[in-house]
Length: 502
Image 1 (tube, rainbow, N blue to C red):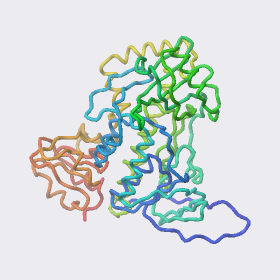
Image 2: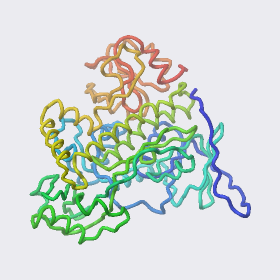
Image 3: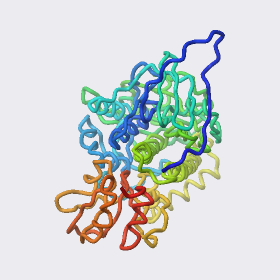
Image 4: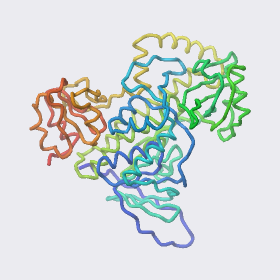
């Protein structure tokens, strides 16, 4: 079974008078942080059949929209759990347009095109969904200490509570308390410029381009956020350029600031009707050195932070959750093969690094600071021409939609082109591939009934389906990635990903 590589001890803060040690409440997995990553992970754990506790330091859920877009790959993951249709039924969530560095891209057609779904909607949806399954967020739980040993982790909180778990996941954001208590390295670059993000109602927004610059380098970007509770269109507005980039992050954003930014770029064409929410964001870029620390794992913004371009922060965090959840479930239930938990870092750390790389490139090409540097403008002009080429559009489309991801896999099937990629949502006659994944188990598509007997020893964790379907045989992990396809090596693949047969 998956081994624990080491332990770390981190007592809570010192006090002058000893206080009684609270008796920890036990659970299989403790998730710290009830943002999209933590909520999605808690749902994956319940789907895997293990107990989970979800805590957050805030006394109530934030009503700020924050991230505003959901990539195609994330929509697929929601669909694989039966959550997509209920999520989209929560309101008006229009299809969003694609871009790279503000250069419009006709992203390749996908059954589930990118949608504008604000983070606050996703959080509310997940919180209600989890509550219906019996898991409620434990709020006002500010983590103050954690100690891990050979069998688990004990977490203590400022309110006097304590929780004992077999594994703990830090989903507590860019300023992660868990990461600080671990002393985990978080290398990268500090923020060097500031931009403004705001949720607004506007007059005239439909008549302007998504990304607009003026001759002085001032910049505005507009993205649809659906409608408010009165059916009125809402937009996410991003402002940058000279004067914006040097402001401290904690400088308040006023209505006058937003009006000035709009008039600077659009003149009288676009007018502010209502400012709902605004904050300043920086281009800080950091990536945790390790995603696993013994029995503690980092996910979401606790593991990676960057300028929020294309909602890649939220989507990357959600994909962290989908990757880690089934693996923790396997470890808790006792069938995880050796090294399975280590594949979380091996698979997701390169993804985080790639996101930071493309965000840095986009930030440079967008000239956020409004320098109007001739070299930057020349590079952008050349890149804009390249972005008209179909091959470049396909590459960037896959990058920004999450669909280009291919996890490294052992070569058990002769390097089949499907291995490591998201499984296509195939029409199998009476069902679709995604529907087969709603149990949270592995799936073997066996159209010719040639492998069912070989897979029978793993029947407690892998379902066999697809008899008579027009597809080739393939083995699919619970997170929707193909881990074997073809005709040879199935039993080796089953053992590698699903452990010893029963």
